[in-house]
Image (cartoon, rainbow, N blue to C red; front, side, top):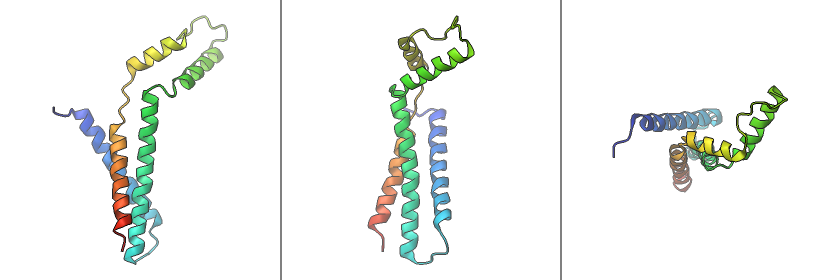
Length: 133
């Protein structure tokens, strides 16, 4: 099975953002520390912070894909429909069931790249914890 170009782009962007975030956290915390032990701790913290961001984003996407936020989305949509049209003559969705069916039909919900990237960053952080001089 050959991966399609969209998944390659998705994984590349995810990896690039992970590397950029790691270096950003490193640059923010590196204040002229020259000891190897301190540098290792800073790298460990940088990888861990980026890992947490990616794992949280992947988890939220996973929950959203399985309908965890659909009730909130439906309520918000109904509220704004009522604000725009108080007489409610033409609602976009008549019931919650119709809204959920439409969302599931149009849902792409790619989240594996976020979770795997976060897990790799977390693994690197744990390796740095255990090899710390």
